[in-house]
Image 1 (cartoon, rainbow, N blue to C red):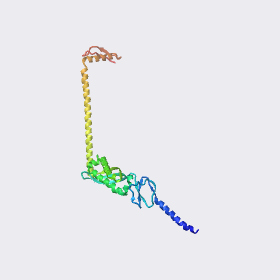
Image 2: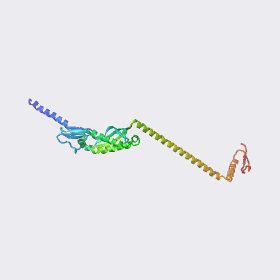
Image 3: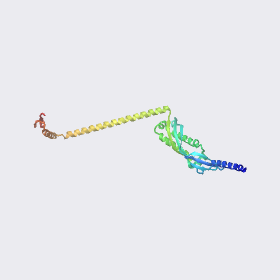
Image 4: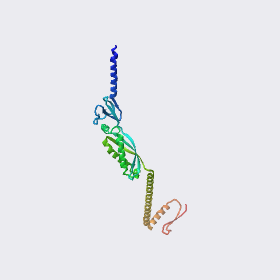
Length: 271
C-alpha cells in the first residue's frame, strides 16, 4: 500500500505530459484558411510541401504551423498620383486578392506573412502612378475611368503574379480632382451638353420643315393633276349624275333643264 503513491506519481506525471504533447500536436485549420508547417528541427518551411488544408491535423509537438487566409480579401487604397499635366489626383480604390495556395510555402519563405505590405501595396501604387500619368484630369473624371481601372489591374497583376499572389480585381471607387479643375470640367461638360441639345433641336426643326415641304408639294401636285383632268365634259357628266340623284330624292322640287350657263340643269324648289 505504501508503494502506490510512489508508483502513481510518475503515472500522473506521464499522463499530464502526454496530454501536453497531444495538445501541442493537434492542430485545426479553419475553413478558408491554409497553413505552412515550420519544422523546428529541420530547415523551417519546406517550399515543396503542400500546405495544410482546413480540418484536423497531427504534427510533431516541436513543430508549429503558420496560418494564412486563402479566401478573397479586400484592401482599401487611397493614393495621391499625378496626371499627365502634373496635377495632383486622389484615387480611392479597392484591391481584391488572395494568396496562391499551391505556392504558399514559397510565399512564406520569400515574402513572409507581411506579403501585403511588402508586395501588393507597393505594386498597386506603382501601377496607379504609371497609368494615371498617361491621362489628363478630364479623361480621369469622365470618359476613361473604366479603361484606367482595367490598366491598373493589368499592370498590378503582372507584378504580383510571379510573387505567388493572385490579383482578382481592382476597383476605382472615386477620383478626386482639385476643386478648380473639377469646376472647370463640369462647366465644359454642361456647355457641351447644351450644344448637343441645341444641335438636336435644329435637326428636329429641319426635319419637321422638310416634312411640311414634302406634304405641301404632294398636295400641290395632286391639285395640279386633278385640275388637268377636270375637262368641261367630265364636269357636265358629274353635274348630270348629281341631278339624277337629286331628282330621285323624295323632297319636292322644280327642275328646269338646260337653263344654266354651262347647259347644266337649274334646280329650284322648297322642302
